[in-house]
Image (cartoon, rainbow, N blue to C red; front, top):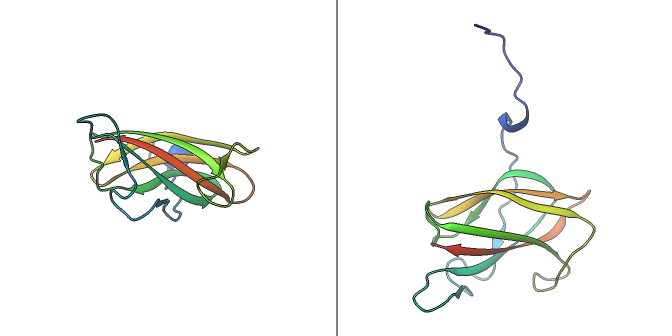
Length: 125
């Protein structure tokens, strides 16, 4: 049995911490759109200013539970989150893990300085 200490690398590294994205409007159901008669699915968005790789970005939303289906899209915006565009930066949202009260997402923003980021989210609680 090898008892040599191993240096943690890759997925074993502790997650990078950053400020949390801000949900549009007030926390909760403000501005959320419900889909279809009897549907509980809704959409919302969050905005953020960052660059780099973040394995566990926390998105807080009390309507999400551990069994929710969460779909996230990422885009860059100019002066305000309503004016989105596709620029030269590569951006991606990878793994998404819902929990009671929100969800975590792996986010990568491949650019040399912080950018204005908008996350559009569709949630089926």
